[in-house]
Image 1 (cartoon, helix red, strand yellow):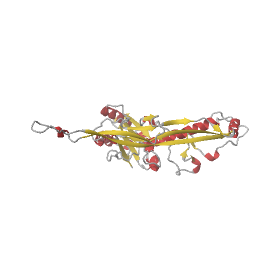
Image 2 (cartoon, rainbow, N blue to C red; image 1 turned 180 degrees about the vertical axis):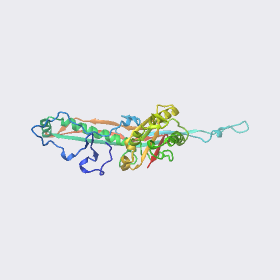
Image 3 (cartoon, rainbow, N blue to C red; image 1 turned 45 degrees about the vertical axis):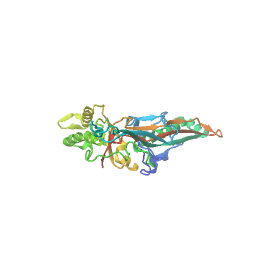
Image 4 (cartoon, rainbow, N blue to C red; image 1 turned 30 degrees about the vertical axis):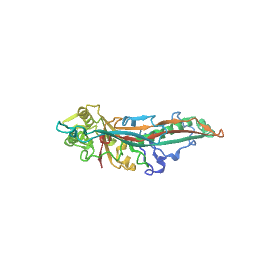
Length: 341
């Protein structure tokens, strides 16, 4: 499932603005409920087919810190830098007074990211539980708990890549406004490039990244590609080299050049149609160093399910809560965007 679909789909294809994507197609939620028409020869299978979403392990894309900053309002990471002018300002000779030497110093500046507190609950009554038990085909309470946990997981997934929909200060991997977008490196889908274009692209990629980092980092280790383009990289690298795919060729070339176990990752959120509501509205490729010193996502309080409670022994509620933040990119020049319309 890709989030950010609210208002884009027919009403019967969404629940709380989220697309119901299953292997057998979209689900019409108006057909849900306990009462279903069956025949005398209808066999009701005991297993149920759960809703299936687009999920991606975002911790494989960015370092994640769980447990730091609980109940705080923001995450602050301090950065230090050197001051003191040119190296050559320190030259001295016996012909000058050395009572006052040129001085170097250090300064500090903070990088900030807001922390959000989240809480939702599930509810059920004795009647609902009895009806589900009578249907004898599913565990109502367990299903509601899974739905609550799924809401948390999918929300964090969206934040990790697209940030917060209404708080511009809480950004994700794909939408940090201070990360540079480098032009004339990727001019179209990589999977559509001919052999000459593919070689030209490979020749430019690391050089443009190195320049963007102010010549301080030449070994990025992660390259995120829109899913549609990634899936097309299974084609041959060239007609003269049909035994190796573009994907394998690119990974081998980047690993050799950087000295890293270079990772090329597919991401549906990088596609224009899946990120336009977040304001990106472009096919975005990302090359970066996947290191906690470069970027990090913080989850101060992970999903915490509380015990159920009731005031009348008929209706029950069970809340859950947590805290989350965005992806704080502290070394902005070690991340580079490449945008393709």
